[in-house]
Length: 144
Picture 1 (cartoon, rainbow, N blue to C red):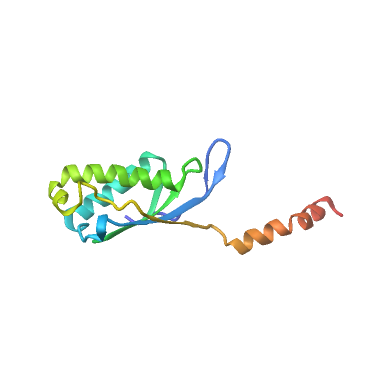
Picture 2: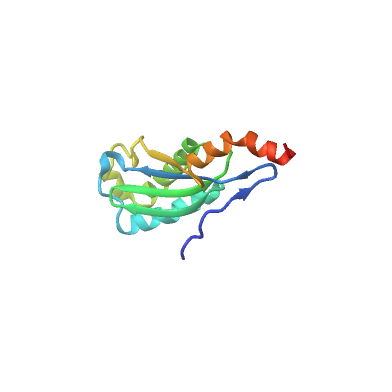
């Protein structure tokens, strides 16, 4: 099933379009995310994203790293999202696949580091132009 393209969401008081691309690695970038572990991790990431109100747009689990592209709610910071996903998946994967414990250090599945980039709906040039031309639009609207 192909996920639908992201769209503007709304809450009671806000409209928003916030997307993030996350990348993180297992401790020491070991090639441990393969086979059933990788498949189960994909399921978990979708489930735990929905749990906090995020929608996964694209997801790929490589043997030594994970990519998650998702649309988030405005009340969640990127740190909250990635900490939730990494924490829940690490605990559950280590429970379901005890053999991973021998391939990790002290039962820690993920490295503490991660990459995050906000992905825009429009470019920064468009926003800059929009802000800089506010008075022009206001004057036109008033008929001046």
